[in-house]
Picture 1 (spheres, helix red, strand yellow):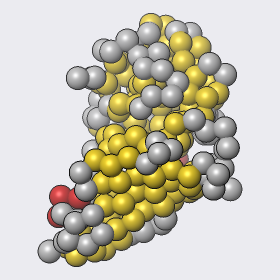
Picture 2 (picture 1 turned 45 degrees about the vertical axis):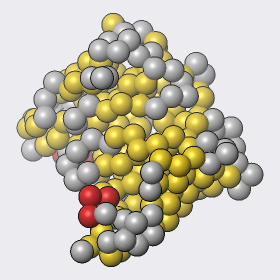
Picture 3 (picture 1 turned 135 degrees about the horizontal axis):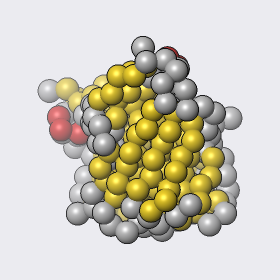
Length: 112
Length: 112
């Protein structure tokens, strides 16, 4: 079974902090994704990566950056957390460009 | 206009009912299509892929109409356990990667 693991289920951070969300997959998938999910807005793509050190902006990249130094790990960075970044963050991976994605369990981030 | 749009829902149906969800997408170059299911406070999980010829998995039937850029999901003989949010997913190949775009989701509640 594919396993996508996010480092934390729940996280509380203060405004202005630098926040790292980590995601690891164990199936040698090429593609990795970060989404945020908010009530009424669905899942919105923040960034995705199709190879080590490669990244592409999604629909809402502002205020975020990513890092993919190793194939299995994709990190989402909130440079200076703000209250409007309080959300559920979901990481996903897929084998190739047109195959289904598998999700981690999500990180519920609260910025106070 | 959103890249992927779904029926807003919620759909409240009795057990045994047949229910249909619809989804439209705007990018005619989209290559792969899926339906995901998301239970409350859980990550999305693949329900089924959607093929041009249509495909069926037990009580679930998915259809794709490329000319109209339209995807559908039909659930027959609804069970209480079908209560969840159903997400339409479209993949567009972007540079060297596949970009997964989610619809907003349609909530289904099956009542006794």
